Image 1 (tube, rainbow, N blue to C red):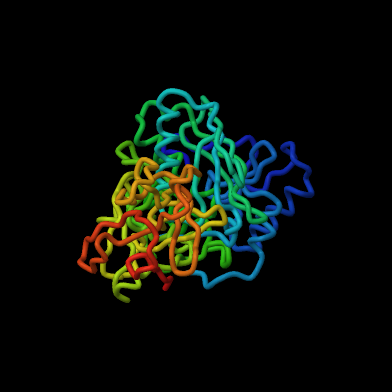
Image 2: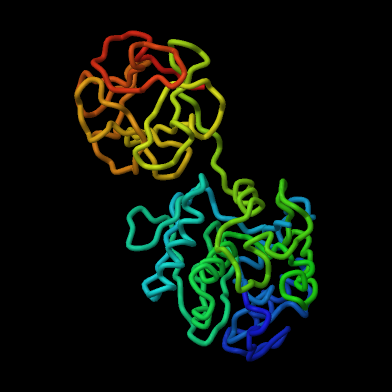
Length: 386
């Protein structure tokens, strides 16, 4: 994404070839983009790389995917190219980022990671990465560039301009979040009229299968209404708007996980108090309502992961096996305090062989504390999925 005042200085532009990449490959990419509906005057070749929308690089594989049959074309748009649900953790190598850029990168990653998506996001070094994106700095750029996914993987890198330091951390966070958006398949929300956010510029092309409207989001863009607008302002907050979150949910929200229903009452579920994703939030018995606060996934490792956030697990407070210890949510850490075994209709803690997930005093009152207690085969310790 380039600011209005400093657009990409192209060594060779708009269907110009011979800039370092093999001409036949470059020509195929450009040809595929034109066939997919991108206007030729919005396609640029810079140092052998092909861009659309000024900041989104397109690889050969990505251009081929854009020709595949897609959904119905139609403020939030995606490409045909999306990240595979088999990728559960996307990591970003930001070793080149220091100072305010490092802070902004952490905030941008947090924007994605705090949402209940099919993938979590983290900065390297980190374990369990399904794919790593390299984040680079170009000291002479005022904006950023990235690319679209291909073969089920995000684009492998994005570049952020060092000249953004003049704007402060919120604007840098905004630009990084925007470029990460391209790497997972988002197009500009004002692709059809760049003048909306840039003050000038035309249509990047509806692209048929290359600009697919995301259900639940507006079909008209306005200034400041999306982090995926083509150009940024000096007053950006760096945060997702409501339509941005809707778009992410439509593309990458995991299928609903089941609720854990108490055998005491078919309308009482294991619930995270207040729907809070804060570590240490207590669990309770509450009226079943289908919210993320009541959705749980049992992993192969025996963790019960909350749908509120990708790295929150059902946890025995302080790893204390004393009967009556409260059960909370906490960052998943693989300890015995977060491992559970299904035995019949009970959930047994790995902290002790005879310790079960239990409803305090077998009460069905809303807000009743969830605890661990000696296994006793009562309905206070029996749970069913729904």
